[in-house]
Image (cartoon, rainbow over all chains, first blue to last red; front, side):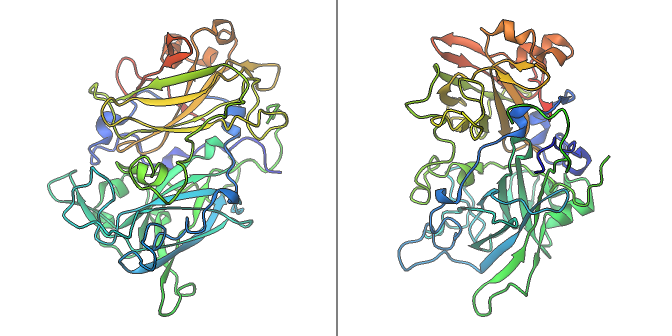
Length: 241
Length: 199
């Protein structure tokens, strides 16, 4: 079992808390150093979600909010990939929750007042749990880009939000998936808060013609890497874990 | 540093609409999931003292966050985490709460966790592990909430005793505002900035 402590989080990989071009981060970024602490059962455990919690259409955003015999508007897509750890091992049983704007770039949220209309057949959320090899898959429609009030003319590239639970609270991660080739990606201050081109590439899904279903849906590949544990048990492994 | 052939996916902000994905029923998207995940931290047969924990998330200008999402993870009344042998089957230990649109309050109804053994004979004081995301927060923030009555445990807690300067420990101790009711405000910046952890 790979149940030793987690490798230290490589924070040079993540956006800094303060990314001034993303204006909302200015007043919401802690200014004192984070305190490093030894991992305990509180971080090495986490909630476990079984496949039994999933409804039949949880992973189908095209239909899970649609009226009977109807479907969400927009280009049909398959998003699939694997949840891996830092050793490249598949992470089974990871809960993946996704949310996104509709094909016009509008969220089903009372605070989103963008001109684009709501789609009565699109809710915008879905979830799935990775299989034994870490693989996951869901169906959706391609979200639209949309404006946001950061600068005088700011637009978010098309994206899907991902929330991921691995096997421990220390692995908790929320991120966003972008679409290869979107010209808005290099203009976005939220994207550009990621400090390295490699990191931005890791958040950019690739068109996967091998998984694309003819006359049905384009497939996009998006792998997610969660923090990994040391592969050999640590002799001071906390008890009760 | 051990070999790391893959690197963790970079975090991105949860954005202003995190509730669509994480608490859709709360924001009016019904009929997809029967309940929002983490809506219930324990059932009626859970052993231990029922408690209510409320709080707010406050930014560097003193403004309340109305779009924050807070997750909690805790042990049962005997200090065992759910999923471990002997843990209370009526305690999920996991909760999710949203800051209220008007008041900014988030709220958990749960039972008070027990002290948790963590190896080498050490015992952690009863606490909730909390994780905070919101628009403008680029990487989820880890912190803990401890209970004001457990001063004996605090003096031996392996985390609290390592915090420097030590007066910052007070940012991790909830205020008891009633019988079984605790208030815990999370300050993102400023003189009262909450201690956040790199775990």
